[in-house]
Image 1 (spheres, rainbow, N blue to C red):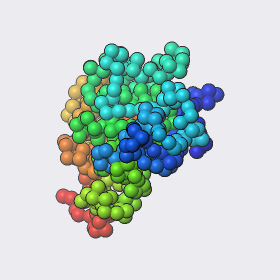
Image 2: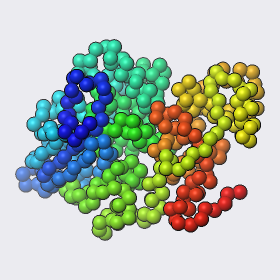
Image 3: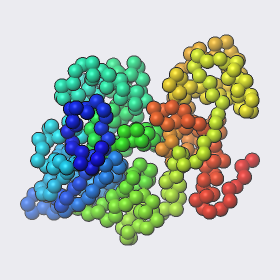
Length: 397
């Protein structure tokens, strides 16, 4: 979508899918009382269509207030906010919010509604027909890597925190909005789940190219996810607004240096993505395939384990050569949630973390719709680290 995109989708192209739209904040101020200091003070900021922009800063700096004024959950005192060429401060706020996705910490799902009904809330408000809504529910659950048949009719209490957060993202995407607002969405989950949700967001963004405004207190998360980072001080004063690479290499002042913290050079490793290095191949089999052929293929390249894929090329589990010799070894291969997987958008730090808990010495790499792309080995990561340091790679025995 071009920079002149509007918030409301064009009915003639509603089914085609919507990319991102430019956001412009122009002199935006928020005061809660006429004598109060501004919570947000004269912010001007442009966000390019299809970018993820991270709002980072200390508590009380106004980053969440700034974000909430975009969908008018908080009304600006003055200034203009444009999405595309549409001034949202002149829109009906309820109608506006139906075309802006919103994800909060803890997902915010309605506990009395099923997963499917939670996702369907906005499409029903937009009066989509039942067949279209049902298809969209299943499409989105598949997109966030939840089997529709397994999860569509469950209630939020039956899901883990990470699964609830995935449903929250699916709900925000239900009406295919050009803009997605995310308010510390992964802050309440454990570190491993957090990493997986971050990877999932990057994978979705590679496919959907929404404009995402993401509030976080975690600078490492900002470096990993952001196309640009806005570092804010009190009153939402933008101290530096630039790419992660530029902020790490050239912090604007002592405040930014203090916020980035020690180890800026190490943080450079989070800027190298799995897609930037050459992947390795593993021995591969498919559910329902010929187990004997899979054994021969593994032995031909000196492997003792095979990664089994389903009919959509999604990794299911590792099986040893001995397990493949059992009768009907590939007839029914359920998914092992413990398989260590990273996406092409994951960082090398993420891959290394996953590798440390893997019993296979490699980590499986997936792309769009979680389709298998290859594996990454520790030698590859060490070579990339050596390149960043400008030193020769160390040999791995």
